[in-house]
Image (cartoon, rainbow, N blue to C red; front, top):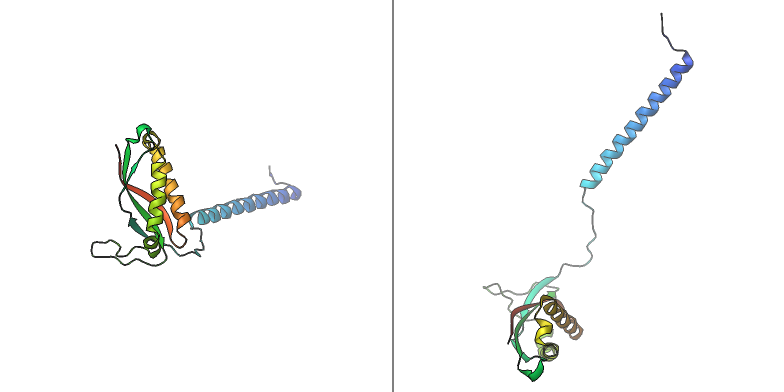
Length: 163
């Protein structure tokens, strides 16, 4: 017995097979495109020049803290990390030879405001990491307010002694 399908059914079979092949091909192409796009880095446009940085040590600060009796004090050494538009001149030890001119010019003003910020805290305010971070942030904000041409990126404490 010959099992041939009528011509009408053969056409629908061919149409179904063609659609299945088309959908499969579409899915394969979509997967390949997705893989290529995922592995390809996204291009970025860098319009700003990457700044150079320089560590700028400030002279040591010793201030009375805002504690009862005024018998507590803070001894602290601060370094600024400043952004520069050009590479700083470096000595043979790897340290910058010159301070940014604006910091030299405004050092007395900066020290005055830093002393005010430091001495307006009690030992319990700045003993914790959160307190130190708040202190660092206050110095950073005030320094950037004073300095117009030089940008302070970070404030680091190299020495921090409460007595």
